Image 1 (cartoon, each protein chain N blue to C red):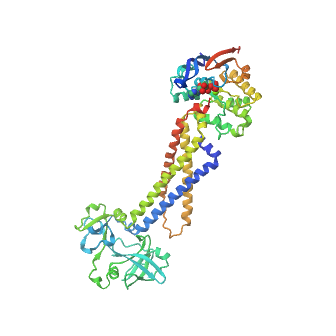
Image 2: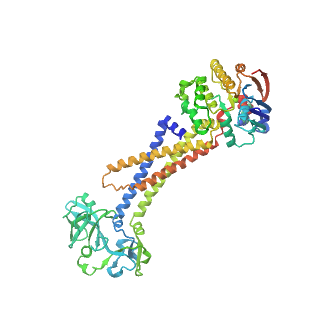
Image 3: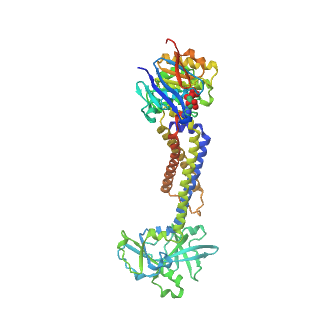
Length: 227
Length: 355
Ligand SMILES: Nc1ncnc2c1ncn2[C@@H]1O[C@H](COP(=O)(O)OP(=O)(O)O)[C@@H](O)[C@H]1O
Ligand SMILES: [Mg+2]
């Protein structure tokens, strides 16, 4: 069974002459251990694709299954629960809470969800991401790369089955960007996650098992490499 | 609480400001409440001292003690456990350089409205009075001869009692005969049975049976009809209620601005799957902490003020009142926060994520 499956997912904004077909009817599936890139220029529908996949907005038509469960039927409250349990978002802009230090960012998740990573796994995650020394720092004191690594830690701490990253390297220089991709790659393989990275940055494709192109809302498989 | 508390810890200045505003509002509420009590007490302390349930006045008096004129034999105690006769006049008492407005109560020393004696002794002979101890602050003392504005007669202070003020004037207690002498002069003998009211103690006022020209007024109504009393308490009560509204609005505005500033943070948290419910509870918890801190500090400030207040300032703090007002302040502050919660519920996580 696919971890994430989209069937004939279609998204239309507006109507009449303001109508935008942000996502043409799309079929897509992703499995455990896959790191997938979706590459396309600005306005091509990448974020629309990712937010529908992550249950942040419903499609106009079609179905989205997460671990076999159709989430298009659910209301916002139920989708919010799915997001908390199954999805880890890594976003372009920092998604850190400014008044919590790194360690507290994780504690916040403990307040809203029980079965997060055990202490030794979290410790491992901190090691992998190289943020062990930053636990008492606040977001304002972190560099762009550090913030992004903390954001990844936050996305992974709830032990989600799917990691969705929207332009995770946009604010980083090349070295930092590659570092982040390496980490995503390592985590996807070692913890058997499903990771989708949408980006306009073609330098990142080397890290991925599958690369899709998206232009004007049309998704097409470009390359597939063996895992 | 986790989010709420950490945000406060990391934004000390802005939350200190909010707490200070709440502190000042609650301080003002507490002072006004104290002032209301103090002023009420100045007007009615002597009435409270009776520990009576009702007063018999004439129908014509319009529940105004000086306007009520009746005779000692107008009431025989029917339906009352105890009753006491009361004659009253207002005057100005002077002794040497000391001068004060006074109310004089003419009473029967054997009846229950006879005051306790805190210093000196009870009046026994003609022209002796027991005075409220507030007169001591004005320089009066035992043995002083008081000249009165309305008569050539002089009275002598033989003792003091406490908590005896009537319509802001200290009370002088004396026997009925002395009062009649002061009031009627030569004609006192003719009017010796004229009094203003009977004060009654009973479990059930409706059992009290009086003549057609008289009325039985319960003590609360009697107090409310003291000149200026209701107007004064209403004004102060209105100010206190208005402060409740102000504190709710001030807090609502503060929290709303803070919430608007945090829309993207809330949005990101919601995208992550943190429920609106959790965020709303966090805002309530924060409001509670702020309001609670503000009220406690306001209370401490009130205590400090109370300790330094000179006796002439008519402020009396009743802790049960302060507690009630404190609870109301916290409660209305939380009402103010509900305004922001609606905003949080409406935040679309998608917008926060950006495209
Ligand atoms: N909420 C929306 N309302 C109207 N149009 C939208 C909305 N979201 C996205 N679009 C449009 O859909 C298209 C795809 O947007 P998006 O998915 O954000 O692209 P990308 O992330 O690749 O830059 C764009 O033309 C954008 O203007
Ligand atoms: Mg985008």
